[in-house]
Amino acid sequence: MSPLEMPYRLSRVGTVMVPEPGRAEEAEGVLNPASGYGPDGRLYLLPRIVAQGNYSRIGLVEVLLDEGVPVSVERRGIVLEPDEGWERGVDHGGVEDPRVTWLPDLGVHIMTYVAFGPLGPRLALATSKDLRTWTRHGPVLFRYEPDLKLDINLFPNKDAVFFPEPVPGPGGKQCWAMLHRPMWNLGWIRANERNVLPAGLDDPRPGIWISYVPVDEVGKDVSRLVRMSGHRLVALPQHPFEVTKIGAGPPPRRVPEGWLLLHHGVSGEIATPASFLPEQGLVYSAGAMILSVDDPGKVVARTSQPLMSPDNPEEQVGTVSNVVFPTCIEETSAGTFVFYGMADARIGVARLDRTD
Picture 1 (tube, one colour):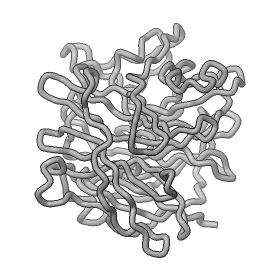
Picture 2 (picture 1 turned 90 degrees about the vertical axis):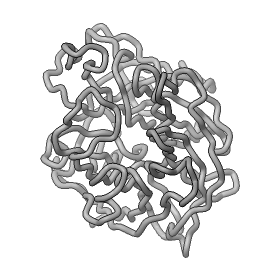
Picture 3 (picture 1 turned 120 degrees about the horizontal axis):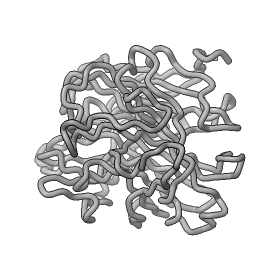
């Protein structure tokens, strides 16, 4: 497989969830869901639900299927509120953009989410056996790596997803691994301190990194998954549709070619680089990479053109214009479906198929 080949395509199916009139908690949108199958065998989404002032909660909705095709949802309540100190600031707060991976070896769903706390967006973990009741394990802690000459814990971070099974880590050791997207701009702390980069990196644009926890350090104690090490760069922006920044989409999916990672690529100029609030003028599209089975920190194939861009009104007009933001993949009897945020306001679904 050449570096530009990608034997997969996305095709739109429709919109499955929109804000319900009269629900104050949904005033600024429903978007960017996680997903999973519950103990009852039913498919659920865990959408980010945004109230006025960009105040986010995580909800639970059951996906309604028509001969296996997702067509709509039924609301089942809120499962995570910004209740902890690391999830709230003086005049803001939120639990945002959940991604959920089922870990069969540990018998739990693990959720990565963005805690919008006093120091901006930070990654945090929670686990559940039923998708309804979640146990927080706190913010992710990145071990200091002398070779990088900086502390990743000082930097905002988003777009984190776990691999569903152990993978080869540093030295070939079996590890649980997480992809994430640190951002090196520290202008939100001090105006004259814009970009502080890890040693060896000369590109300040946000890219995808990988960090690990050795399997033997975790055992059955899922709380140990917050302690990550072995941080490595996986990919930076490379093509025009992702020239500004990239970030992981749904959890990696094992395919014949390796690990399929759908990602979002962003083009356009960031007008206020120190802001963490939604910003107009950017275009978010969906792309894809194949990561190596032997070394999941290595990209072996990548799309040079997006698999899907904001081409219809529901993706072009909303809380933030021009956004296609894939966040979860699930199988049903009708095929493989990708759920994605549409203009930061509603949730769409697309079908994922092979092209060969």
